[in-house]
Length: 152
Image (cartoon, rainbow, N blue to C red):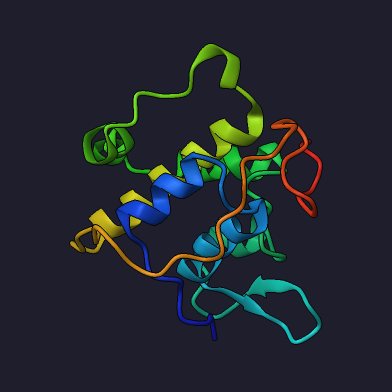
């Protein structure tokens, strides 16, 4: 059974876009919403609530920031009517040219997927909510935060 997902809020999603959370935390926002859960050995695995397509393609929870195929699958899973929620709900116009790194564009994909997930359930995005301990932006945005997996 997937754990209770971390509550979403505008402030949290803006922190994700600003690269103030680890890549793992970004994944942990999505995994339980896809039905993945911890297996007791430190891994997240597909569970009974994981859609068959996700479970077959990714029996271990996908690394949405580190791995391109996982990010592509996440992008493709966003229904067309929800593709612009990042811009419509958060006013996010994208990163500037000097900020365009795969890690950051994949974070934008993750946030858009989370907004689409809320929209599909008819749930509103809260303005405020709990936050994890926020990190400083990484000195090297390509490498990310300590402990982030390398980008593939």
